[in-house]
Length: 101
Image (spheres, rainbow, N blue to C red):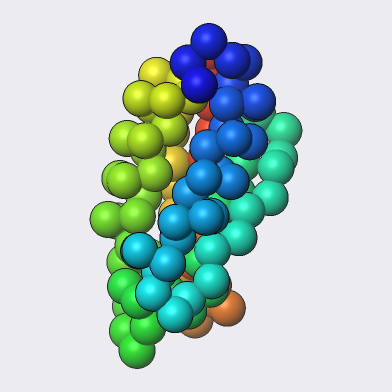
């Protein structure tokens, strides 16, 4: 993936992640949406946030894991931020992945 432009590499990577998402979302659902300069990752019924109540997002494990994978395989300065979390009352957990030059 490294020789590809970040946008193309990310497209391939998120499809691979989706194919194996059952390993980390269990009965939850993994979705993604392309966006300019990155991608949005969505986990519905996240096992980390399920039955939790918090004032701030609680899925740090996912954020860190996604960031590490994207940094290694897509772009070294990738940043991942959880922007919505089911533990705070959102319908799903969402992560904004940004590729920085």
